[in-house]
Figure 1 (cartoon, rainbow, N blue to C red):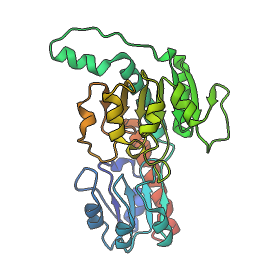
Figure 2 (cartoon, helix red, strand yellow):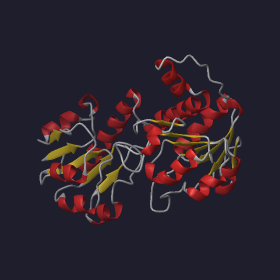
Figure 3 (cartoon, rainbow, N blue to C red):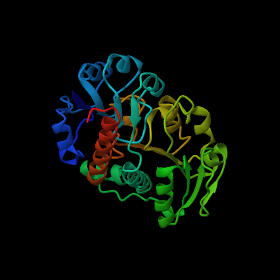
Figure 4 (cartoon, rainbow, N blue to C red):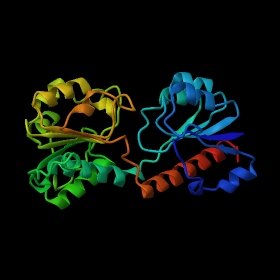
Length: 308
């Protein structure tokens, strides 16, 4: 029997109860590509001796799952489950877990980092300096801004706490959240888009949130506003965003994720866009905790199915 780890990297020192797997003669296999896997690559790795996996963001769609004949446990090393066909997994009796707690702080801090960079022009000024131009750039203070959070779950709440510490005004839209914060005003989506200086996305990707930010919603935003997405790429219509940024409908964007990754599209060419390579959870402390949580959940699943 085998457990397949398909995340691009994994420190086996963080694997909980690794001796228990060894005593049950369960092999642990790492991702040989050391990068995000394609559908065909993950299908090839999920051989008929694989009973459990710790997954990254590779597509675990119907085709992959039906070909994984012995797979019984999937643990997503991260929060989102949009890469997993949950209906097919349920039909096939595959248990699916995630690690929602560990990434929250890292994602929230990167969100704030992107906001500060956009407001103070840190990366663009650094680029200018490297090209020989010493030009101090006038920026703006985060504490003077009204920030709108689309999604007010675990990460959205943490972002709001950090924003409030800076003195920013925070409002949020999330129809799934009934618990209100006394310092955060809840509002409808159109109001949030029209009145926020910074709009930040913190919702999972699904069919209902596909292109949640589109040409129409971008037109509602203020001309000097900034769009931040450290969540999922499919939430934004990237063609509409490119048009909005090049026609000055909004002032800038900060993006950590894209609809197709690795991203090679035209948003990379714009000076008012700062991009990072889907690294929201990539803080060493967070990564360690995610791997511990993922392996712990995997062991629980292996015990449930009688493999150990």
